[in-house]
Image 1 (cartoon, one colour):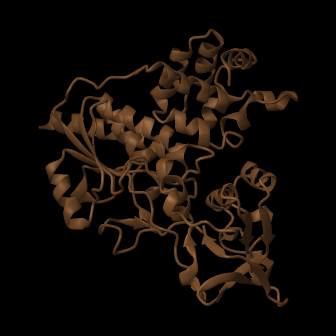
Image 2: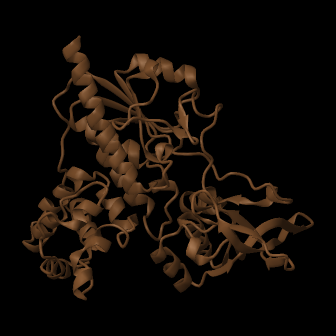
Image 3: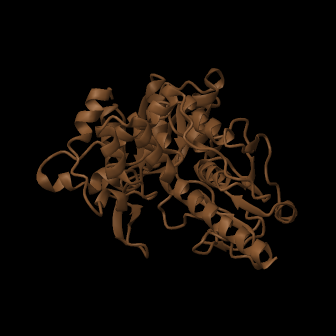
Length: 427
């Protein structure tokens, strides 16, 4: 978006009081204020307003489902006009800071307190930035080679290049945060040790890999997130399919299929229910259709077909929709029709991520496979009263997203600061 276009778009805004767009933004950016600053060509001020509430504003400008959030709530939708292009304006403002080399924040006055952040995804980076701004000495442990979590490894390049994610990592480093990559939290004993060594700990662990499908030939199925990661960060070693079937119907499934299309492959998404039950956002579905991705509904994977160790197709059971289950979703049940075979040379699964269990949950309280936390994001574990958590690891209600992880990090950082101040006062 050019500067003149941004100013013209900003001048369309009504600058609503008690704006619905602000309420719809999980991080509650003062959207009318930043747009007003864009309209007066105070782009640096606009970006600062954004980053004060959402330190990963550049990422969220690219990956947020704005049609479901801020733009979907814009009052212009009720006036037979297109909503203000909030996402594009946010990207324009935050990119301006990078282009100008402006650093809007500095670390706070040192408090003498040490905080460990485990995981450098959106929740971890957000928490680390806010903690550093409060003056705490922050260290991040990241198990992979590069920091940034899904922003680096799991969001397709078409939406967010690695460089954008790494710029935000650098912004966190510039606040004095120490980032130790190839370093992970291994077990419950180590968690108890670091909880004693640090004044507070934040767990932004994310979730595990895509769970395995219990069907014949499942050993030939690729993990959707791993596939996207390889293409994005290790292209020379990444698979190069010609005809892909992706199992699942969420945003990751669409991203995996889109990645295959960028490699020149044909791509089909197989889903056991119908389009009405897809968990992907409607805009994502329409985007996929325009990208030439095929959808086969009411098809449940039954077997990966191979010849001499090479994938040749995916056999699916044809389904129909039955009564609603306890969650209100109509159940997919076999229709009795003949099986369907989808020809392909690669099968990718994108059916969610593995949750925590008694072995992977660091012996912490769990709620439906997610870390159990209080309203202030403190863990529900009395012996670890200085440990907090956020991001996908706690999002059992199905509202996991980059922007919610950023908000979790912000809430946790404020809770940690309040906890440390109380401890110091009591001490």
